[in-house]
Length: 86
Image (cartoon, rainbow, N blue to C red; front, side, top):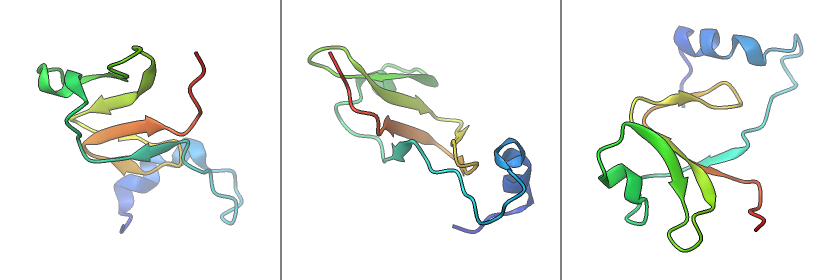
């Protein structure tokens, strides 16, 4: 992925002064999947929930969002890496 000038602005809060130290993403970004019911319900942005237990699995936003590492992802279909505990 090529980073442009806009990406530098979005990443401003992520800078530590040490270019070798990079913030790691806490999510996995995927393509829309059939089980993601809320994307088919007409929402622009919403939580992604498990169809079985309703646990929060992630988030989506058709307009995009700024990832934790500073990258801009558009559109965003984000699944959290953190394990789910019930």
